[in-house]
Image (cartoon, rainbow, N blue to C red; front, side, top):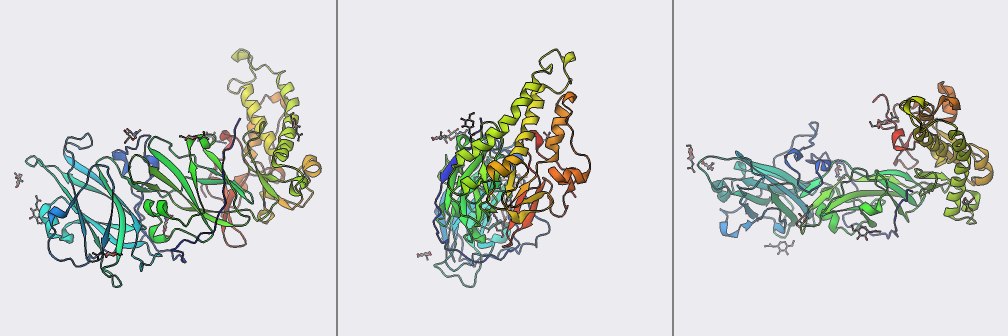
Length: 541
Ligand SMILES: *[C@@H]1O[C@H](CO)[C@@H](O)[C@H](O)[C@H]1NC(C)=O
Ligand SMILES: *[C@@H]1O[C@H](CO)[C@@H](O)[C@H](O)[C@H]1NC(C)=O
Ligand SMILES: *[C@@H]1O[C@H](CO)[C@@H](O)[C@H](O)[C@H]1NC(C)=O
Ligand SMILES: *[C@@H]1O[C@H](CO)[C@@H](O)[C@H](O)[C@H]1NC(C)=O
Ligand SMILES: *[C@@H]1O[C@H](CO)[C@@H](O)[C@H](O)[C@H]1NC(C)=O
Ligand SMILES: *[C@@H]1O[C@H](CO)[C@@H](O)[C@H](O)[C@H]1NC(C)=O
Ligand SMILES: *[C@@H]1O[C@H](CO)[C@@H](O)[C@H](O)[C@H]1NC(C)=O
Ligand SMILES: *[C@@H]1O[C@H](CO)[C@@H](O)[C@H](O)[C@H]1NC(C)=O
């Protein structure tokens, strides 16, 4: 039995993020690393450095370091150790220097070249810095050449700019036969800046490693919204890679309290921020199914939220990854409530029409769920008896199909039955060709109209046509199951992304529209259940 884990009854307090400001979207050319490349151990290996740089982005203006006085004292250099991050700060007109001696005997050193992953996360900017900018005004320079390092001649070094609170790079050095020692020199220097003074200070965390990046940013959110009602959300985080020495947390920010653009890819800034409403720990034992579903309740009707997933490497003092921020909006109507953890229809995890009793407080959520589940099960029983008449467990040659078994048929029938007896509900403002509108008191069958008796208008996301096609495919022909064939008939009772307005439907059968407030809403074009029934659309048009 699938039990959706109720993570918390959170109480979102209104906390103002101190960088609160209107975002101007600046074209940023953030180097992005795809975290999914990480295997179960933290070791990322050499297949990891996959950067996503948009070729359409404007060219980067090379940073100009602020004028520095004279050569640096090599005694003042901080020695960095493999995979041991440091936290430091640098003021305007100064620099901070580091060195790292790669281990030439390490399994990570190739016979002919040294690779060193450099990654950093910005925790704080000068007070006067414009947080709407992607640019952070800070650059990390590196070289393997001691003379160059000592002269602080940044033109001779490779530059890694901090952007959106993040910096990453890969230092490469071809090994020479007659050289037995290599040192990587790194200088953190503020760019020249008109408003900066000697009090302008940047705080950062920084690490080098021959194995992997210790600070990461991913261009994908890794979490998606399965469905919402007016106070609860079901999320799925199917691609999370739970493993040792890492913990996952999702930060939820209230309406408008975004992480400022200048730090939105910084593990440090997000981990240290206080502007979020709540942090949800995502653990293997608090998520359900292969899709890692989990539930967050205590949110507010009609409210708009943004959220970000963060992974923390727990075996080091600082370090982790930030995934792309995403947004969601709570339902504007109390017509629908999320259904989950049902005994019989155990794959149901979406909003359903509430009953008048529930709406008026006379019925609990558990009772509402039992009403739907019992009704569905009561319709399944006759089918089960009929199924017992079919030769299922006999020799292959005596079966009704060499490739489909009675279990396939039962599974497909059950998913179909649950999807037609437990309608998927969305707010009536989303009514459309795939989302049939119903007034209060009405519904797709007598059970909905008489027992549930919806108190408010709502719209139904119709079951996907392929759920019907699955029973025709999987069940013995004796049952005479058939699905509507013409588009007109299909549209009366099923949804099919192939009939959708192509402008509004993305590749995975998700509709995208804007609600009254201009917020983007996404939801399935039709209701599917069962992993095998996930819609694969036929064209990418
Ligand atoms: C270091 O850089 C200096 C100046 O660019 C150059 O003359 C020298 O050959 C370099 N040393 C090595 C070992 O590459
Ligand atoms: C290493 O050998 C190359 C070519 O033989 C020579 O140019 C270079 O100066 C040598 N480097 C050192 C540090 O001896
Ligand atoms: C660096 O900046 C901080 C405040 O941002 C200030 O307290 C400190 O004195 C500055 N350090 C130097 C050496 O100017
Ligand atoms: C889940 O696992 C963590 C350790 O990984 C443990 O601390 C926690 O108590 C577990 N939670 C539940 C509800 O079992
Ligand atoms: C977890 O961290 C500990 C301590 O650093 C280390 O010994 C262990 O190998 C790590 N485990 C994994 C799976 O990386
Ligand atoms: C940070 O903001 C920039 C610019 O608005 C955006 O392109 C980028 O995707 C954001 N990063 C995250 C992690 O949301
Ligand atoms: C649902 O069925 C269970 C077991 O058959 C029964 O105990 C329960 O009262 C029923 N609930 C409703 C709301 O019909
Ligand atoms: C969709 O694709 C997945 C993975 O390729 C597959 O397992 C599933 O059966 C497909 N579903 C349909 C309805 O074709």
